[in-house]
Image (tube, rainbow, N blue to C red; front, side, top):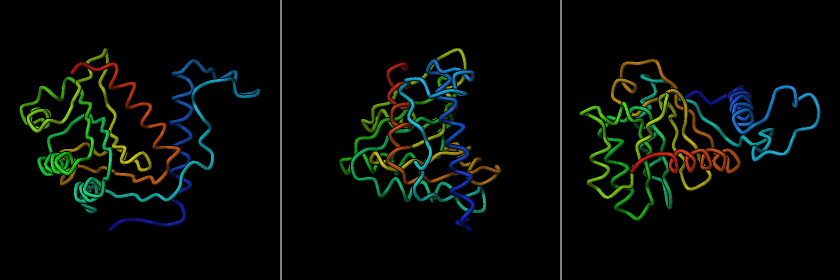
Length: 195
């Protein structure tokens, strides 16, 4: 059962604040500079940036079905950065979205894309642009940006194990501000990854 109560927006804002701090630090900010006025950077403050939110927990909330429902509602764009992607039904939903005219792009982690069950080859065969991120560490993101105003994120990898066996979470955020920040991160990953 989906949990939707008044405490979740507070939790989401806290998570978003930590994510904002992380982006601030990796973009050249420093902890000592936070005691004064915020230095110029490309990271916008997150306060008040979260609109509606919804949280699901796997396996009881059937996270894959929840995500597929959102993929099926996409009108123009689907940008995905995902560590492990082996879930056939999620892959089929992305191919269906591409076939109905939605622009779909996916960044995979290098180590996971080499898995024989990874959806990367199916995506390529369907004409979906993919890139593979190979860096000194894992591309461990798990997020989807839909139509520039919605983000799905959390610990949920797009796999049957994550959906049916693991304790995972999937968070839906209806926020243009957060979607813009996730889209910027996606563009950076896209530019740094091989096709």
